[in-house]
Length: 198
Image (tube, rainbow, N blue to C red; front, side, top):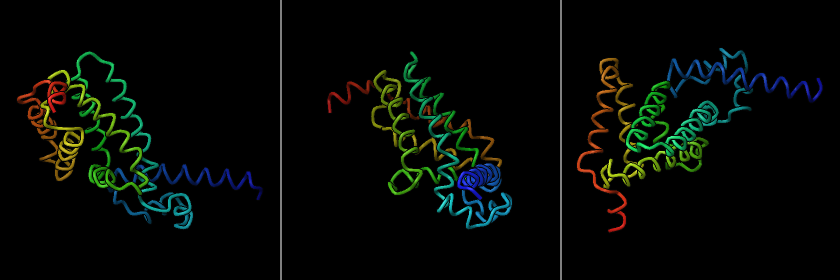
């Protein structure tokens, strides 16, 4: 077999593993069985580990595009007139995406402080872009000044986590999200003025 054929086979295996992993993780969550992924993709565990040495490597490949899309979306919303609605819209899109994979919110919160995690860079870029939306809403006196991007990210992630715990709670996800947003707005004053005073 030529080198070109080997590379083509390796690429097909990579794509097949990702395709199957997307389905299995949707079914089982981020702690899905790697052995099950290997079996359904019809590749050996050695092949899977050559492409994805750790579970985080596999999750990073699955989630990188989603995180990059949310980062780009936050940057796009920075240019809109209503900073409060921009933040609300982005957080709703984030929450909707986070519910795709059970355990995703836990994985994201875990990797924020773990610079060695393959998920760290793409997750951090997304969170920083969201943080700019928070600061802009604070500057326009829509969001209370005593929170930061991490607070907002953690609160909305918590809503996502709670919604994973059962169908009755999942049905109230939008209500819980609205409660978080209402709490962020309460007593808001100009973020720019508060930061200047500090």
